[in-house]
Each structure stands twice: as C-alpha cells, then as structure tokens.
Amino acid sequence: MTGIRFMDEIAAPRRSTVHSSALRPSRRQSTENEIPLSEYVIAMAVDVPQLELYTHVSKDLQLWIERIKGIYKEAEAEALKMTPELFQEFVLADEEGQNELLHQLKLIKVNKHAQAKSEWYDWKTQWVEQLYEKVDQGFRDLEADAKVLENIIRQTQEVVPALNEEYENLLRELEQEQADVAELENCDQGYLNELKTTIHEQSVALEAFRADVDEGKAKLDRLQEKLEEIEAQKLETTNAIQVAERQVQVQKNSTHAEVFRLKDELEALQNLHMLQVTKVLPELFEFRYASSYDVSVPCENFCPVIKEVSITRVQSAKLKYKDAFPALSPLILKTASSLITRSNGDLSVRQIVERLGDYWSACSQLLAQLKLVAIKYPVAVTHGEDDGSGFTATVTVMLPSKKAKALISFIFDTRTFSSWPISIQSMQCDVKVAYGPVQRDTLQEAILGRLREATVADNYGCLLDACTVALDCYV
Image (cartoon, rainbow, N blue to C red):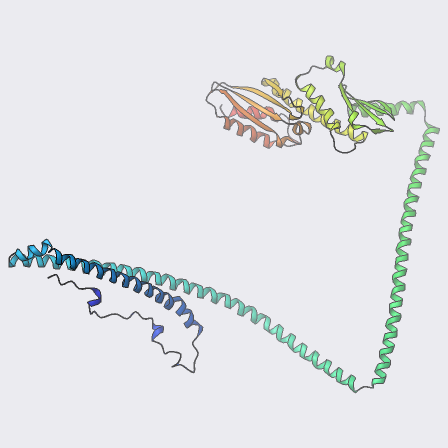
C-alpha cells in the first residue's frame, strides 16, 4: 500500500568517487618507470583517509541495516497480531478516502525521502570538507618539506665545491707520497739505515739539550724568586730605617710647640668623629662617643675580649640633652651591646670603634627623621619585649576634609634601624583607619610609593613626606 523500499533494494546509478590516482596503470603494467614519491604522498594524504572513512561508514551502515531489518521483522510480527488502525480505516473507507490516504502517505514518503537525501548530502558535504582539510594539511606539509629540501640542497651545493677541491688536493698529496715511497724503495737501503741511525742519535742529543734547557729555566725561576724575596726584605729594611730615622728626627727636633700642635690636631680629629679616647692600656681600652656613651673594651695584650665589652650612658648627658623619645634610649643601648657581643669572629679594637660609630650614626639620622615627623604630627614609639624585634613608630594623622583619622605605623627591625639609611628600601609600614570614609590601601600605597623614591643620598625628611603624601590623597 505504501510502496516503501529499503536503500539496498533501490537500483540507482552510482557516481564514481574513485580518485584519479586509482585509474592510473598499476605497477605491474609499468615495468620501465618507477612510481614517484609524490604518488606515495598523495596516496597517504588522500586515498588512505578515504579508505579508512569508507570502511568505518560501511561498517556503521551495515550495523544500521541489520538493526532496521530486525525492527522491520518485529513490526511485521506485531502487524500480523494486531492490524493497525490505519489499515482498518483504509479498508473501511470508500474509494475516494482510500485515494486521499494514499496521497497523504505518498506525501509523507516523499518528505521523508527528501529529508533522508538532505541528511545524506549534509553528511557527504561534511565528509568532503574534512577531506579538503586533510588535503590542505598534506599540501602544507609538502610545501614545508620542499622548503627544507631546498635549504638542504642549497647548503649541499655550497659545500660540494670545497669538498671536491679538498678531494683533489688529497689525491695530489697521495700521488706525491706514493712517488716519494717509490723513490725511497729504489734508493740505497744501507745509506737510508745510516741516515736513520744518525737521526736517532741527533734526537737523543736534542732531548739531552732540552733537558738541560728545562733545568736551566728551573734554576732561573728559583733565582728569580730568591731575588724577589731579597728585594722585599730590602724594601722592609728600608722602610724600617726610614721610620727609625723619622722617629730620631722627631726626638731630636721636637719642641714644646710641636707637642701642642699635635695635641690640637688629635682633639680636632676626635671632635670631627665625635670620638674621645679616654684610656689606652694593654688590658683596657675606653672611649666616649658623642659625649653620650662610654664604651669599655677589656683586652688581653691589646686584643679585645668581645664578650666582656660594656656600653653605658653618660649620666651628665641625660641632664644636658633632652630625650625626644625616651622609649628608644634603652633599646638603642642594648642593641649596641648585642651588636658587639653577638658578632661572629674576632674583632679588633678598630673594628669595634668603626662598627659602633656606624651604628650610632645610623641611629642619630633615624632619630632626626622621627623628630621632623614629631614637629607636625603626634608620634608614639613602642617596642616589643624582645630587644631583637626592633620598634614601631606610630604617627597619628587627621584628614579634616573627610573627617577621618588614620594611624600610620613605620616598622623598624634591628637590621633596618642599625644600618639606616642603607636599609631604607626594606622598611615596612602599616596603616589603620580609626574612623572616617578613607581607604587603608590607598594611604598605604601612597606611603610606600614615597619611600621607594628615597635613596641613600636623598632621604632627608622621607618619613614626613610619606605622611604628607598620604594626606594629599584626600585633599
């Protein structure tokens, strides 16, 4: 009634989809000419993917055909058990109704057939596009291989003339050596043996001469080293003589005025370095720094005992100078003591003086920075229970435009404040907003940006500038 048939029962003409390479004569037919490499490349890039795809599609279609046949048999069995309503309606209808049903079924059949053809064409189009992609990829690979081969051929052509020339030179050398060998074979062998013996004797004598030359060079080197040692001793003796003559000259020609002049120069140097030496003995060395700290260094024959070094604050300095930050004085004193007593290795008296001088210079510069900040803003200094943890300087700033208050904390560990301003880039800071609509991160970024601009040579008032820059963010 419906006229439905499966695809394997339709006898439709099939278009050829065989690649042109398959229509060429086989290798058995072409016995004289070999198949070129391009044919293999085309076969691997076009024919083999087509064959793989065709095999996969064929297996898939075969499975679908077997499955549809089983479904069709099941439908036939069910139709035999129970006649569908459509067939009953077709039997009960008159001739005009049957014609209408047949017309509707034919329309459905044509629609489904058209849909199947459309899906088939879509699949085939996608398949062809995939083949084009593979062909394009294979073509690009071939072009890349061609470029590589061109470079190889060009390099080979550049090297070949030199190799040919080298080969010709080797051939000429070989011919010359062969001619020399033939000439030697034709010479008197006794005379040749005599020449060989003479050459051997001369070689032995030459080796003996070389050994004598090496021995002479060794002696010359030893004499040169001895001469250098004598010259060094001569220089040391000359320097010692000059020092002794200078001391004798001073002892002979020194006067009372010369002694006072040297004393004034010594005092000027001590004032310049803020260092006053008070006692120098084989067992003790004492000096005073900046009229504020007394340093006592016990010694053993002028060698300092590091563990027994003591540093104290001068009592008169507490009354003479006002301490702007009383909380820092004990910390600075303890850190100075630990800087010497906890040092690795043995220190000389000079190294102790230089290290303490650098430390107190760094502390004085940092205190000057904090004093500048304290002139404009309240500054509170706190330090932890551990002396090695450093201290924190907290600056309280007001932002009238935002009706806000912020606490800026500059954190100084022991390494930072003991080597200021060399360690200015490693200083840390923290910002806390007490109240008001201001952003903590904005203030902290402004402060860190100003501190990063400071250098060892240009750092005067950097802490005060950092606070001012933070306030300028909310002007």
